[in-house]
Image (tube, rainbow, N blue to C red; front, top):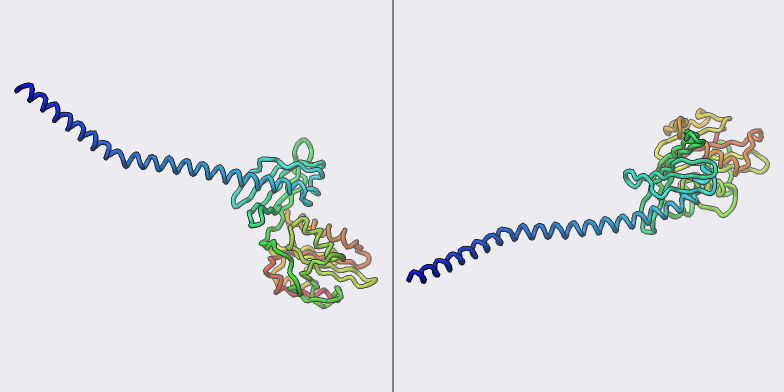
Length: 296
């Protein structure tokens, strides 16, 4: 009898221990499931981050290759240009690349974005340094603008049109949205587009036979700025003053001077002949409402 009682007690104790183990596992099961889900999530996040990083690096490599052929960058630093492999990342797709060329080195600020057609970039600033001491010799900020990057418009442009390509004094600027394959106006547009990007430039030209050449270039930008010809002032354009245009000042003036220099070289500018060049910067959305006559 004692032996039977001892055996029964052992069986009861064994059952109780098994029950306690079962309760422990039931309490631990949710925690283990949570840890498993957390592990799966971490593995998935790591794989996703690695794939995004790989894809972004592909885009950065594509932008680096384009910067090495970019007209503005090559003019600033001299061909051939070498662009650093590891840019400094900023907010909203902004990057800063180290650039070295035959005439100096420095930094280029670039805005990078992904589109359905791939990766696009826009140079927003150039800081060039020369010499062993690394002193800054050139700094220019490209006025920012929306820039739709789409195909050129067809038909009539947002400003008064002249089928002969000339504009007389007292008439509005002859801006044209059609990209011609030849002619001085299209060459001016193409030259400046090498700096600011496609479809962000309009040019008005007055090229009468034997007369002075008047040109007004408008570039897409956030502010309303103007760079006048030395023979003109903002007082000669009351419509511009009324529209809120201000004479450009500070570092941005160097950028507008680049637009002006490109225009001068393209149109064979001669001050003594009476040639004139005006450079405007304003939002592209304002182009349709801006009507500016040439000075009388």
